[in-house]
Length: 170
Image (cartoon, rainbow, N blue to C red; front, side, top):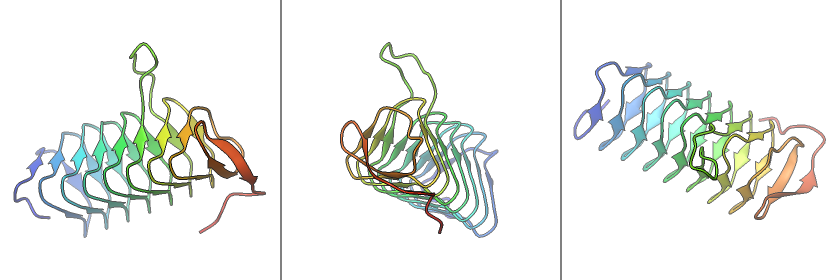
């Protein structure tokens, strides 16, 4: 772990073979598993937990109390709101954004992304929604409602365009 130019809380817990780039800010109560790569300019706020074998790209910001499963990739410049959960094996493309406020700016909780979900570039997820295992969300989609049927979703608001019989297995 490089500590040059980083601000890291003294209670930060990190697993074996994990690496952290430069200019990162890691707040208290953050834990990362084994074999995690965190690139530069990453911000992990209070209570964030990242599983094993994850890749967190440059410029990713997590607002706290986020739960990231095992074997998850989150690409650059993504903003993960407080309380978001991302399931094992999911891939998040660049510039993904989640919300956790309602129309009155009251915090209502982050989205829950299932296992083996693929989310394209510039996708936005509304507060408190759930995405089922194996869903595919296309580039620039705006997801405002729960996704409960496995398939491919595109558009704003996101709509099912191809239904699948079962979640995609890796």
